[in-house]
Length: 362
Image 1 (tube, rainbow, N blue to C red):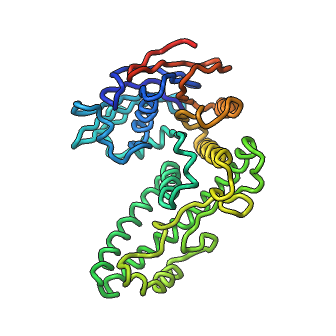
Image 2: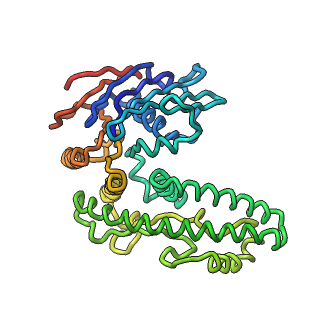
Image 3: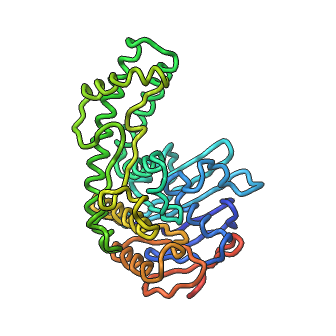
């Protein structure tokens, strides 16, 4: 899996250009505030339909432009695919191999990207909602049925909360209680199973990066016990036990929509006892574990986007990480403020200044 070519028009400060990439390592070199992160963001946006920096996608459109346009050619098991994406203030259009599609689900089956930025190190110091979105997104990319399950749960939750706001009688809540319980049971099971499987590679990768992996663990946490095998009836009983709180707050006060993943070091919450460097290694190990999981299920390595990771890792750790990605066969994009000497046979470098990108030689 690799991105062969990218055409960019009116994306943030990037000058309109067409780029061809190495299937292995691509260095994007430039001073701060020149647009390096914008290029990584453009790749991520084309592949996922999301930005890792903002919820307001229209802010991606270059100032004084009506719309942005991205075209990407990528390889999946040796077969080339092409996606085209246009975004204006009112319309988002997406096509794959010349056919219009409504969502990125088909693209996720062909192209997977993982991004690491300086903000990534804050994952386990963030709120449960941030951690929940991260792991839900990871699962949704891998399992389309999980994304559909979450969508059904959110719709049921909204309808149920509307009834609670109106102090609706129990007979009107009953069908939504049943739906909530059935969907919650499946979400809890899938979350638990995915994390348990991911932890095997997560600890392994962490052991390659640090010396504290034996004491590392992670688990979903919330008002519902993820170690328990829930069914719809037992969850409905839990829901009934919260009736007084629901009437008080007029919303559903338990469920998967409130939970998050917590990481631990020697049984203690990671953010409270681990150094910033240790937390950084935990997140990097998580990304590598996700790559291992993806590769074991798809026989392909995902594309890695490493933005300004040189500010987070020393030279030795960076070298080891890039060698690990090389062994995985993962295409990597690395932004940096200075040239790096890398022992890669297939490497391309690009210079970025004031939004203008040019291929260069090291």
